[in-house]
Length: 410
Image (tube, rainbow, N blue to C red; front, side, top):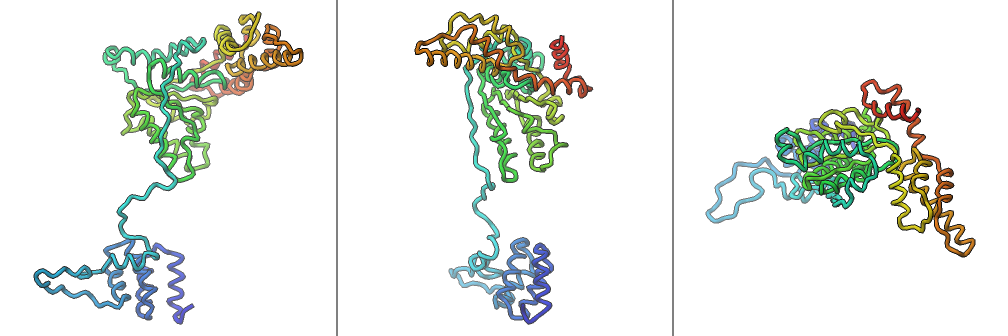
């Protein structure tokens, strides 16, 4: 506490309202009048940091430093160095003296964005093609029409005005090969492949998540033609009406801008997004020009199941396995489920080999027993999807799902 109640009350008011420059200048005037120049200098410096041209603050600073008002400069003698302190305030000296009170007025080096580092994303060259994908004939046809065909036929693309930009949303139960399909598309077109998950984007610092997302799309544009794969898009592009976090809403806004912004040139960038919950995606992401095409990726059909089983048994000791019979016994199994069936059958044969001391091959009984033990993981997803197809399909966007569920029920 000081001898002046007025100064004390003004000091408290300035602490409560630090951005009120008029109040701060009034306090500095009283401090100068009370002979407390050191305190007045701090307040004047705070004002000058925000308003460098404030004449009142400059005069208070001069008075607090014990200087008189600057007089008109007298002509310097020929050859004499100019006085750096005249006319006006010696800002260099003040910044040095009061660097612990206020930051410098001008910064010569740009300060880095807090929490942001220059990101480099892994750009791959996929070696798998659509020929390596078992089944999925309808999916392959849709990909051929939407992107692969125009890419391979530039003259026809020009004739029909077909752009090489676009987005395709793959949805369906987990473990049915959406990620593998995206890699196959990149390999089919000989394009670069960049895969993104939510952990590559989100950052605790404000603005860094949006910057990471922008850097990702810039990297894809720089490697065009490029397949940009956004896995679990429902986590990154969740419905904004259901988000309680304002920072996540701005991330969704940034994603919308990158997909179809005024300044973004995504020619040659084909965006593939995958999700198990398309009903949780913000509707703006699915409007024309963004993820405007939707494709249902279903559990593999019988020929595809046989091909997947053969793939997972290729390096294992097998004897007498009828892949067609095992494929019949694994209807509605996902690709991941089929891999688990092969792994479990191998465990049965290995257990017997350890017990008997003689190596036993994986046989038909092992495969069928494993198929009976493992239940398809897609059942839970279809139970949820059925409610969506029945009660939330006013726009018709889930007609293909509804048709499949009807066929499956028969």
